[in-house]
Amino acid sequence: MRAYRFVTLDVFTDRRFGGNQLAVFPDARGMSDAEMQALAAEFNLSETTFVLPPADPANTARVRIFNRVAEMPFAGHPSVGTGFVLAEAGQAGSLRLEQIAGLVTVEVWRDTAGQVTGTAIAAPQPLAVGQELPAEVAAACASIPSASVVTARHAPTLAADGGNPRLLVEVTAEALAAAAPDLAAFRRVVAEVPALRGFLSLYLYRRDGATVRARMFSPLTGTWEDPATGSAATPLAGFLLRLSGAESAALDIIQGVEMGRPSLLRTTARRTAEGIRATVGGGCVQVLRGEALL
Image 1 (tube, rainbow, N blue to C red):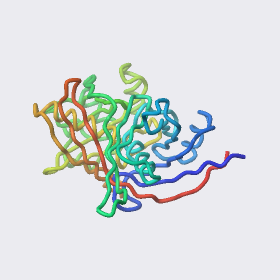
Image 2: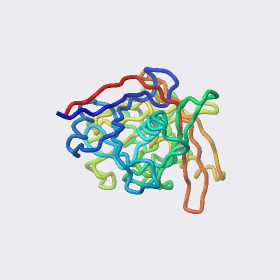
Image 3: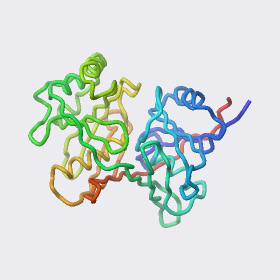
Image 4: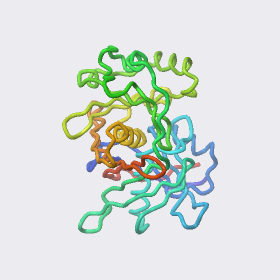
């Protein structure tokens, strides 16, 4: 029997039992793909990460990310949290994580005493804007009236920057509070829209003064609601910059409030020669340590 050490942490928060939960296996050498997927299903969190030696020794590590049912090319809070765990273990300076979607660079945040408090990651790819969907489709998936989808600036739009495409949907404050995923509607939409390739992640947002309030639903992958979604925050930041015409912007996103797990995601976006690039960062707190037996 083999024993693999793991830690769990809460990401995009400065206190335990807030933010988004994550399990990290800091040394997954010797694990099979099937074992990684089984452990991710066993933890039953939105994602679990497995750290391996890098293919290129110039990089820090190779990181594989699994949700409950499949491996992911990139995800935000797993990258932020894994960077935090590696920095706490003694990795110095900025980190470079190899992922399926590309290289993810990690900036480590420390307090005045030098303790690691969080990290910020750069999405591995520039913003890619995809298909628009009708307001009534997004509304049906969120169980809200079609009229509560705000389309003055944009229709519900698919966008990504290395991870799974997210359907970005601006809604009224009342709709954001009342929204709940309709599983039948999600299934119907992915069956009717080939561009979705069997996947739909709904990211609702509403401007609230200088910040944005957001909620994310992905019931087809087992995440009924997500308390903090870094790989939705970065395309949202990039997409809003694209609409504004500005050269760069910083945006704080508050998510998870309705779940009792408030999260703060601090994003930036800027125009570059290769397109709009975005970052997301936040605090992390370790919660559990243990071993998995295989």
